[in-house]
Image (tube, rainbow, N blue to C red; front, side):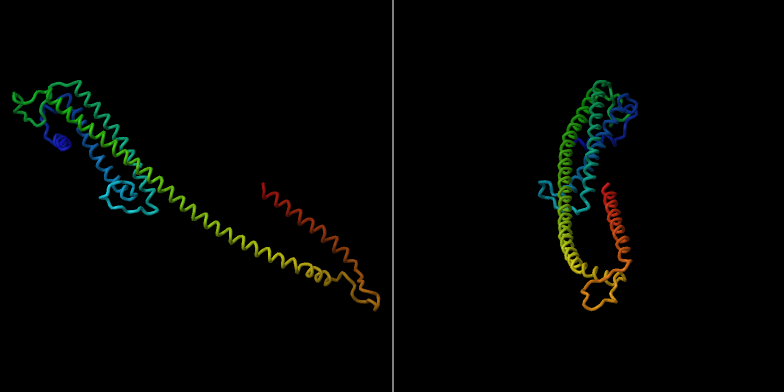
Length: 269
Protein backbone atom coordinates (compact mmCIF):
# COMPACT_ATOMS: atom_id res chain seq x y z
CA UNK A 1 0.00 0.00 0.00
CA UNK A 2 1.21 3.48 -0.85
CA UNK A 3 0.58 4.85 2.61
CA UNK A 4 2.48 2.02 4.28
CA UNK A 5 5.36 2.35 1.85
CA UNK A 6 5.61 6.11 2.38
CA UNK A 7 5.43 5.67 6.15
CA UNK A 8 8.17 3.05 5.98
CA UNK A 9 10.34 5.38 3.91
CA UNK A 10 9.76 8.16 6.43
CA UNK A 11 10.75 5.95 9.37
CA UNK A 12 13.71 4.31 7.64
CA UNK A 13 17.31 5.00 8.55
CA UNK A 14 18.64 7.48 6.04
CA UNK A 15 22.08 7.05 4.56
CA UNK A 16 24.47 9.97 5.09
CA UNK A 17 24.86 10.39 1.34
CA UNK A 18 21.09 10.87 1.01
CA UNK A 19 20.86 13.34 3.89
CA UNK A 20 23.54 15.49 2.30
CA UNK A 21 21.82 15.50 -1.07
CA UNK A 22 20.35 18.89 -2.19
CA UNK A 23 16.92 17.35 -2.90
CA UNK A 24 16.63 15.64 0.49
CA UNK A 25 14.85 18.57 2.28
CA UNK A 26 12.17 18.74 -0.40
CA UNK A 27 11.87 14.95 -0.45
CA UNK A 28 11.55 14.72 3.34
CA UNK A 29 9.11 17.65 3.51
CA UNK A 30 6.81 16.06 0.94
CA UNK A 31 6.83 12.77 2.85
CA UNK A 32 6.05 14.49 6.16
CA UNK A 33 3.25 16.57 4.66
CA UNK A 34 1.77 13.49 3.00
CA UNK A 35 1.82 11.56 6.29
CA UNK A 36 0.36 14.55 8.16
CA UNK A 37 -2.40 14.81 5.56
CA UNK A 38 -3.29 11.14 6.05
CA UNK A 39 -3.49 11.65 9.82
CA UNK A 40 -5.66 14.75 9.40
CA UNK A 41 -8.06 12.96 7.06
CA UNK A 42 -8.36 10.03 9.48
CA UNK A 43 -9.22 12.39 12.36
CA UNK A 44 -11.77 14.28 10.28
CA UNK A 45 -13.40 11.06 9.07
CA UNK A 46 -13.79 9.87 12.65
CA UNK A 47 -15.43 13.14 13.66
CA UNK A 48 -17.72 13.14 10.61
CA UNK A 49 -18.82 9.57 11.31
CA UNK A 50 -19.76 10.52 14.87
CA UNK A 51 -21.73 13.56 13.71
CA UNK A 52 -23.46 11.55 10.97
CA UNK A 53 -24.55 9.02 13.57
CA UNK A 54 -25.95 11.83 15.73
CA UNK A 55 -27.81 13.67 12.97
CA UNK A 56 -28.94 10.63 10.99
CA UNK A 57 -28.21 12.35 7.66
CA UNK A 58 -26.36 9.50 5.95
CA UNK A 59 -27.03 6.33 3.99
CA UNK A 60 -24.77 3.99 5.93
CA UNK A 61 -27.02 1.22 7.26
CA UNK A 62 -24.31 -0.21 9.50
CA UNK A 63 -24.22 2.85 11.74
CA UNK A 64 -26.37 3.15 14.81
CA UNK A 65 -28.28 6.39 14.90
CA UNK A 66 -28.58 8.40 18.12
CA UNK A 67 -30.62 11.56 18.05
CA UNK A 68 -28.66 14.56 19.35
CA UNK A 69 -29.78 16.34 22.48
CA UNK A 70 -31.16 19.86 22.23
CA UNK A 71 -27.99 21.46 23.54
CA UNK A 72 -25.61 19.44 21.35
CA UNK A 73 -26.49 20.93 17.97
CA UNK A 74 -24.33 24.00 18.45
CA UNK A 75 -21.37 21.87 19.56
CA UNK A 76 -21.78 19.51 16.60
CA UNK A 77 -22.00 22.46 14.22
CA UNK A 78 -18.79 23.89 15.70
CA UNK A 79 -17.06 20.53 15.18
CA UNK A 80 -18.09 20.45 11.52
CA UNK A 81 -16.91 24.01 11.01
CA UNK A 82 -13.57 23.02 12.51
CA UNK A 83 -13.37 20.03 10.15
CA UNK A 84 -14.08 22.31 7.19
CA UNK A 85 -11.25 24.60 8.30
CA UNK A 86 -8.87 21.62 8.62
CA UNK A 87 -9.81 20.43 5.15
CA UNK A 88 -9.11 23.89 3.75
CA UNK A 89 -5.70 23.76 5.41
CA UNK A 90 -5.22 20.25 4.02
CA UNK A 91 -5.94 21.50 0.51
CA UNK A 92 -3.14 24.01 0.93
CA UNK A 93 -0.81 21.24 2.10
CA UNK A 94 -1.67 19.15 -0.96
CA UNK A 95 -0.79 22.08 -3.18
CA UNK A 96 2.53 22.42 -1.36
CA UNK A 97 3.23 18.71 -1.90
CA UNK A 98 2.48 19.05 -5.60
CA UNK A 99 4.81 22.03 -5.81
CA UNK A 100 7.57 20.07 -4.05
CA UNK A 101 7.08 17.11 -6.39
CA UNK A 102 7.34 19.37 -9.41
CA UNK A 103 10.42 20.99 -7.92
CA UNK A 104 12.13 17.63 -7.31
CA UNK A 105 11.26 16.36 -10.77
CA UNK A 106 12.50 19.53 -12.42
CA UNK A 107 15.75 19.59 -10.45
CA UNK A 108 16.32 15.84 -10.45
CA UNK A 109 19.94 14.84 -9.87
CA UNK A 110 21.60 11.62 -8.72
CA UNK A 111 20.03 10.72 -5.37
CA UNK A 112 21.07 7.74 -3.29
CA UNK A 113 18.73 4.97 -2.26
CA UNK A 114 17.44 5.76 1.28
CA UNK A 115 17.60 2.09 2.26
CA UNK A 116 21.10 1.54 0.94
CA UNK A 117 24.10 1.31 3.21
CA UNK A 118 27.15 3.49 2.82
CA UNK A 119 29.25 0.46 1.95
CA UNK A 120 27.01 -0.26 -1.03
CA UNK A 121 27.55 3.16 -2.52
CA UNK A 122 29.33 1.75 -5.57
CA UNK A 123 26.94 -1.15 -6.16
CA UNK A 124 26.17 -1.26 -9.86
CA UNK A 125 22.94 -3.22 -9.27
CA UNK A 126 21.42 -0.29 -7.39
CA UNK A 127 18.80 1.73 -9.35
CA UNK A 128 20.03 4.91 -10.92
CA UNK A 129 19.36 8.27 -9.33
CA UNK A 130 16.94 9.24 -12.10
CA UNK A 131 14.98 6.04 -11.53
CA UNK A 132 14.80 6.67 -7.79
CA UNK A 133 13.64 10.26 -8.21
CA UNK A 134 11.05 9.21 -10.77
CA UNK A 135 9.76 6.36 -8.60
CA UNK A 136 9.51 8.51 -5.48
CA UNK A 137 7.91 11.30 -7.45
CA UNK A 138 5.39 8.93 -9.01
CA UNK A 139 4.59 7.37 -5.63
CA UNK A 140 4.10 10.66 -3.81
CA UNK A 141 2.25 12.20 -6.77
CA UNK A 142 -0.18 9.29 -6.98
CA UNK A 143 -0.70 9.38 -3.23
CA UNK A 144 -1.35 13.11 -3.45
CA UNK A 145 -3.99 12.51 -6.11
CA UNK A 146 -5.71 9.95 -3.90
CA UNK A 147 -5.58 12.34 -0.96
CA UNK A 148 -7.08 15.09 -3.11
CA UNK A 149 -9.98 12.84 -4.10
CA UNK A 150 -10.44 11.69 -0.51
CA UNK A 151 -10.30 15.28 0.75
CA UNK A 152 -12.97 16.37 -1.74
CA UNK A 153 -15.19 13.45 -0.68
CA UNK A 154 -14.80 14.25 3.01
CA UNK A 155 -15.42 17.93 2.26
CA UNK A 156 -18.76 17.04 0.68
CA UNK A 157 -19.72 14.96 3.71
CA UNK A 158 -18.78 17.83 6.01
CA UNK A 159 -20.88 20.27 3.98
CA UNK A 160 -23.84 17.88 4.11
CA UNK A 161 -23.59 17.68 7.89
CA UNK A 162 -23.24 21.46 8.22
CA UNK A 163 -26.41 21.92 6.15
CA UNK A 164 -28.19 19.20 8.15
CA UNK A 165 -27.22 20.79 11.45
CA UNK A 166 -28.36 24.18 10.16
CA UNK A 167 -31.80 22.76 9.37
CA UNK A 168 -31.98 20.91 12.69
CA UNK A 169 -31.14 24.10 14.56
CA UNK A 170 -33.74 25.98 12.50
CA UNK A 171 -36.35 23.32 13.32
CA UNK A 172 -35.45 23.57 16.99
CA UNK A 173 -35.76 27.35 16.88
CA UNK A 174 -39.13 27.04 15.14
CA UNK A 175 -40.32 24.62 17.81
CA UNK A 176 -39.21 27.01 20.54
CA UNK A 177 -40.90 29.90 18.73
CA UNK A 178 -44.10 27.84 18.44
CA UNK A 179 -44.02 27.08 22.15
CA UNK A 180 -43.41 30.74 22.90
CA UNK A 181 -46.31 31.74 20.64
CA UNK A 182 -48.57 29.22 22.39
CA UNK A 183 -47.56 30.57 25.78
CA UNK A 184 -48.13 34.14 24.55
CA UNK A 185 -51.55 33.17 23.26
CA UNK A 186 -52.43 31.65 26.62
CA UNK A 187 -51.23 34.80 28.39
CA UNK A 188 -53.31 36.92 25.99
CA UNK A 189 -56.40 34.85 26.81
CA UNK A 190 -55.76 35.27 30.52
CA UNK A 191 -55.24 39.01 30.03
CA UNK A 192 -58.53 39.24 28.12
CA UNK A 193 -60.28 37.38 30.92
CA UNK A 194 -58.72 39.71 33.50
CA UNK A 195 -59.71 42.71 31.40
CA UNK A 196 -63.31 41.50 31.35
CA UNK A 197 -63.19 41.10 35.11
CA UNK A 198 -61.82 44.63 35.50
CA UNK A 199 -64.61 45.96 33.31
CA UNK A 200 -67.14 44.22 35.53
CA UNK A 201 -65.53 45.74 38.62
CA UNK A 202 -65.59 49.16 36.95
CA UNK A 203 -69.30 48.74 36.21
CA UNK A 204 -69.96 47.79 39.83
CA UNK A 205 -67.96 50.82 41.01
CA UNK A 206 -69.87 53.08 38.61
CA UNK A 207 -73.12 51.68 39.96
CA UNK A 208 -72.28 52.61 43.54
CA UNK A 209 -70.26 55.78 42.84
CA UNK A 210 -73.20 58.25 42.42
CA UNK A 211 -74.84 57.11 45.63
CA UNK A 212 -71.52 57.23 47.48
CA UNK A 213 -70.83 60.73 46.19
CA UNK A 214 -74.28 61.97 47.21
CA UNK A 215 -73.98 60.36 50.65
CA UNK A 216 -70.53 61.85 51.19
CA UNK A 217 -71.68 65.26 49.99
CA UNK A 218 -74.74 65.31 52.23
CA UNK A 219 -72.69 64.18 55.21
CA UNK A 220 -70.46 67.25 55.01
CA UNK A 221 -71.46 70.38 56.98
CA UNK A 222 -72.33 72.30 53.84
CA UNK A 223 -76.09 72.25 54.24
CA UNK A 224 -78.45 73.43 56.93
CA UNK A 225 -80.54 70.46 57.90
CA UNK A 226 -81.88 71.81 61.19
CA UNK A 227 -84.30 74.66 61.61
CA UNK A 228 -86.62 73.65 58.82
CA UNK A 229 -90.28 74.43 59.40
CA UNK A 230 -92.94 71.85 58.59
CA UNK A 231 -94.68 72.40 55.29
CA UNK A 232 -91.86 74.34 53.70
CA UNK A 233 -91.06 71.54 51.20
CA UNK A 234 -87.87 69.60 50.69
CA UNK A 235 -85.63 72.55 50.08
CA UNK A 236 -82.34 72.60 51.96
CA UNK A 237 -80.43 75.76 52.70
CA UNK A 238 -76.70 75.87 52.04
CA UNK A 239 -73.94 77.15 54.19
CA UNK A 240 -71.21 79.54 52.98
CA UNK A 241 -68.76 76.63 52.88
CA UNK A 242 -70.76 75.08 50.02
CA UNK A 243 -69.43 77.60 47.51
CA UNK A 244 -65.95 77.24 48.97
CA UNK A 245 -66.14 73.48 48.41
CA UNK A 246 -66.77 73.89 44.68
CA UNK A 247 -64.24 76.69 44.40
CA UNK A 248 -61.54 74.32 45.67
CA UNK A 249 -62.74 70.98 44.27
CA UNK A 250 -63.26 72.04 40.65
CA UNK A 251 -59.76 73.57 40.14
CA UNK A 252 -58.15 70.58 41.86
CA UNK A 253 -60.05 68.20 39.59
CA UNK A 254 -59.03 70.14 36.49
CA UNK A 255 -55.40 70.27 37.69
CA UNK A 256 -55.43 66.51 38.27
CA UNK A 257 -56.61 65.78 34.71
CA UNK A 258 -54.09 68.25 33.28
CA UNK A 259 -51.21 66.59 35.14
CA UNK A 260 -52.44 63.19 33.98
CA UNK A 261 -52.51 64.38 30.36
CA UNK A 262 -48.99 65.78 30.64
CA UNK A 263 -47.76 62.46 32.05
CA UNK A 264 -49.38 60.53 29.17
CA UNK A 265 -47.73 62.79 26.57
CA UNK A 266 -44.34 62.42 28.29
CA UNK A 267 -44.67 58.62 28.26
CA UNK A 268 -45.30 58.58 24.48
CA UNK A 269 -42.08 60.48 23.69
